[in-house]
Figure 1: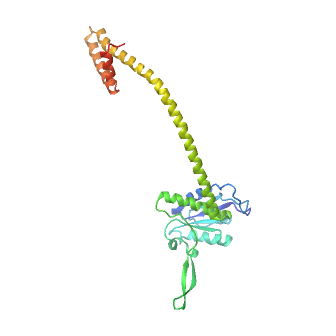
Figure 2: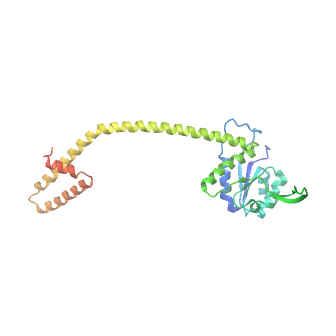
Figure 3: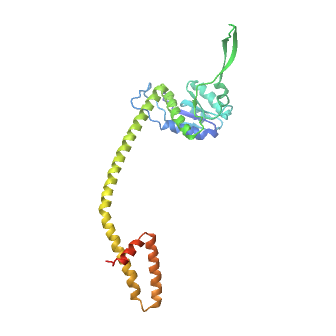
Length: 284
């Protein structure tokens, strides 16, 4: 890596594609390399990412940022194909870096309508016909590109993870398939560890619930006795309070209303049967 490189990747897109450009950039930045991966260049990195999504005219700062970036990741969509700001930056990067360090990522549209025209190569190819005659045809060769087109959010996340690995591998000079296999192995180990953790948590929860069940059983008798005493107190209050104010008709009116409200509240709590039992059973 040159000491002049300030960025590992410049993510270039039109303004409309800025959200997905930043999403891809953050996915790459947060990617963790599997253990024991040996880099061809020990000084290589992939997490210093620059975003250029403003479509502003190219000035000295833009040129300096492009020159200081090792790779250019171009977000391709129909708006990209003939955008002057994008094409100007592409030309600059090709002049200073060549084409090997440009990674195309298609996010919308078909390749023929999303890639800049300079990305699509037209090549004369000779074909042998059944009668052994040879004809020459012009064929369109599209570049190999990362693909983030998807029809659902779930599929979009899957493709983002996959392309993150491939782009990171390219930036680090690794073979994408090798890094993807390591990534799958790491994911399997993570899932296995999670399953083990869930199993331990479930066993612990089962032990806690068993303990609580035993405690609840022991406390159930206490709770039943507390309920019986509470009902007894309520019964005596309902019976004795009116007698205490037998000579005060105004007080009795308020007490009768309060007693009736109390009975309704007990009925709503499901204690009306217990109250009836206490009242007919002689109380405490």
